[in-house]
Amino acid sequence: MTTDTEVALPLAGSFYITTPIYYVNDRPHIGHAYTTIIADVLRRYRVLFGQPTYFLTGTDEHGQKVAEAARARGLEPQAHVDGMVENFIHAWKELEIDYDIFMRTTFPFHREVVAIALQQLYDKGEIYRRDYEGWYSVSEEIFYPDKDIVDGKSPAGKAVTRITETNYFFRMSSYQERLISYIEANPGFIFPESRRNEVLGFLRQPLADLCISRPKARVSWGIPLPFDLEFVTYVWFDALLNYTSAVGYLQDTRAADFSRLWQGVVHLIGKDILITHAVYWPTMLMALGVPLPERIVAHGWWLTAPGAKMSKSEGRVVSPLDMKDVVGVDPLRYFLVRAMRLGHDAMFSEAEVITRVNADLANNLGNLFSRVVGLLVKYFDGLVPAAEASAPESKILSDLTEETVASAIKHVVEFAPDLGIEAVMTLLNRTNQYVSDRAPWKMAKEDLKHAAETLRCALEVVRISGILLSPVMPTKMAELAERLTGSRSVAKSSDLAWGQLVTGASVGIGPVLFPKIEIEQETE
Ligand code: MSP
Image (cartoon, rainbow, N blue to C red):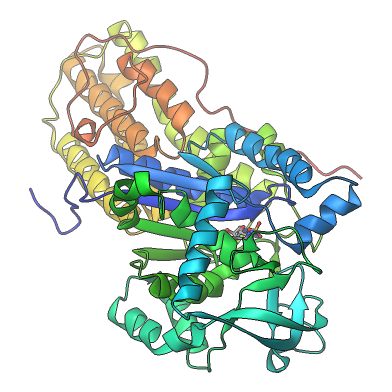
């Protein structure tokens, strides 16, 4: 059966997904964890769908902000960043992030690539020197001309200082028309569409050239400009290049890696860094003669109150590790993927996490599994009985499962994993209803075949749902798979077909998969 929701598997080409490289000074909060978890989840889905993948995350370690923080701690910048980076490495380990490379902009090979790229652009006449006067926001590491300053602050409301100095500039303005044409000709390049429109709106204004240097006298912590050692590279110019340097760009022995991986690159970012990724970066790539990324996916913000972005500078942050201690790592991952539509903002609170996790995981999936296992133990010694999905309602269930598989795959490929999960939850709800309607406990005495069919069909749904949820909850779903099939090994897309439970296999009875979590009452 072919439906219009079907996606050809395995998917063609490779899938290379990146997160932003985070400022190393920060401690990871839920916002950072979200981007990294979504990237991890999308990549695990692609592995399930049979596609070769590569996953990059890392830290952005140069710039004035880092140098100032190191000074405040009385440390050399390198010693400071070597210590700080552990916060991210540790958090990602705790959150089951399975990256291929943790990029650090202080890696010597990256610094070399940046220097080579700068020299190439300089030799081509893409970089020139001139005097500059404008406003600088240290917290955003961005220059603003007079026209962008609102009430003495940056457009994002950050403090700025007046700066007059000689600097080097990249001829970004000369790529404005080419970039507009590219975005117009490639509707999928910037996702979602609202962000694409935002970038096109931005590009309707005159585009300035990009200042890509800082005088060493002011900022010494950075990559020296190869053609003028009195300057270091602007931190964004350095940081964006990490996506290419990580996979072999401008490295003789890794040219094949680069051409293989770069053609399928997806940059996952928050909407706060849209312009740097969708304007600065593509123009830099055009000047360097490198094809543009396949897609830039900009997600929204986690808010702690309506309109209030979770951010360190505003003093509103939730630690993902504290939250993990309350609900467990897989339920936290589940909430983050389920509760935000990619591209939109969403609210984050402990109560929302617990409510969602209890409803979907404890009451729906967990409850179905324990009901079915309980009945299986009672009537079939805990062994999977032989049975066909022959009753009309069983047939409906197996058809719905097939449709759910197809629609989950389609949603994931279209960067809407929340909808994929929603489809699985609907299927599980329907299966709970199916078990209640057929009441196998009533029929078991006179018609064991009826009970066998009900339990086997329900268990088949649990098995397939477990595979569909495994990229989101790798450990819990491996535990579930082990209890159903005896094996924890990572599933393949062919395992998603109906009817693969083994007759006579023993289903493991174990602890409750998702214990219900109590919401702590606020005490006075
Ligand atoms: N270092 C730059 C990125 C350079 S990439 C070449 C940077 N770092 S950051 O530490 O500030 O990370 C920003 C990213 O963190 C956002 O783009 C987003 O992915 C994530 N989030 C930070 N706060 C967030 C929320 N409140 N909500 C959701 N994600 C947010 O910018």
